[in-house]
Image (cartoon, rainbow, N blue to C red; front, top):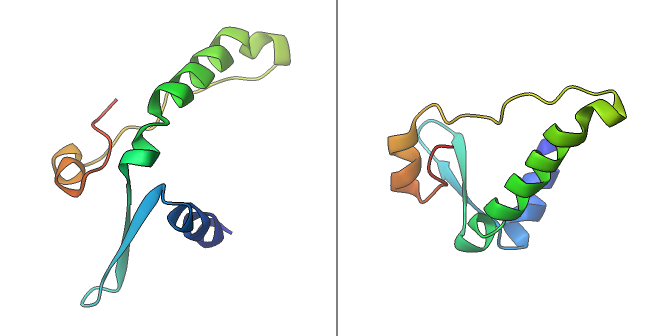
Length: 80
């Protein structure tokens, strides 16, 4: 299911998929179009935190990048 979603995002131009043939690992990075969603998603997250109690849910902290330097080299979003 995750693979399908990532493939869809790639086809829509929101992410770029690269594959390392030696290690057979895949990397997905946001395109400029994908990065342009950052502010919108931050507002949605902030709204969710503000209204979480109204829906009886808990909202955790946003994900953090493990390797921000590598992400910036690949064109991914900077650390939050």
